[in-house]
Image (cartoon, rainbow, N blue to C red):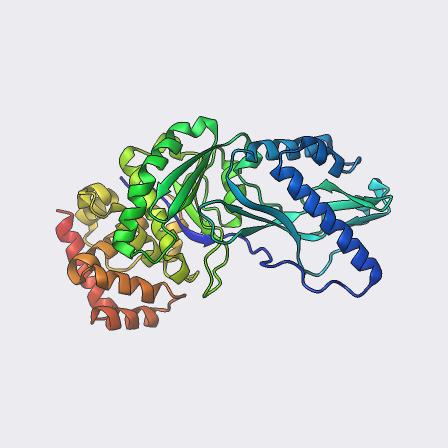
Length: 421
């Protein structure tokens, strides 16, 4: 029954706001104004699916496949309910374009500005998300055009790619408790996308029934079709395309809505997920979404993943042996667990990772049964507020459950041994 998921993770940091005061240097000001106008025209051409306008914005020296990629992206996006799509210059130190890149263009000026894509999906995103763009632009005859959005040698910036960059997409809109949820998938993922869409209303209600209603209660779900797409969408935090799904977001800014929350299903999900596991994985990831605003990166993974798995499996009626078969077999041979899983166990792969997830779920299930779900939620809120030393974990256990790590682990081990029989 065990199926690997991945915890909520921020995408690689992108500048969160547009450039502020324009530079005092007249040349810099003119260059910035020219490129800002280019970015506005680019965004408008993509939003309106205007192939002619896109062709006019692309530099003559650009590779033919770059223009075709722009046209395909705009066409693929035409069915996605966007409430915003734009490009922004952001304030970052400028890195000169290497001469071996600039010289062959034979342009008056060549610039690799710091740019972000700003977009939001209607009905779900309260605030837009921002993603980095590696842009190369050239000026000819007082007009700027786009040369490429590929990586530029010597500049540490990479363009984020969405599902629409990997082929045609279909969009399913679903009414859920907090508004309209959206599933974006490729035509070949129609069956899984349909199953997810059918599950979404109930999954959101189930998560709210456990976590509470203080979250958006709507979601954007991407279903990817290849390992390359999965890695591009999720970014450097991708846990590997063999995971069933992962949740992602922009970096959390305390006191503000969390931007860019997405549940991303991996390319293997269509073949691996059953009706039961589709439901449990979706609820698991939506739990990460619901709890994201109170979750600090680096918190113990046994708490983050165990809590989400408990929510995902809650009220399913599945037995301990069905949900933790690897742990049950290990207990039968070697006795109950005596330590909590460490973060490295979850990313190790193979049986070690499977065992870590099952053990983490069993910790949460034990706490819920022995101390109550209110105590489990309190434990999560205290454990998930940042990295924890062994002393920190012991203190939180004592303050929330009334007993320290050693006793909690002993009780948990005995409970697991009983459940495994």
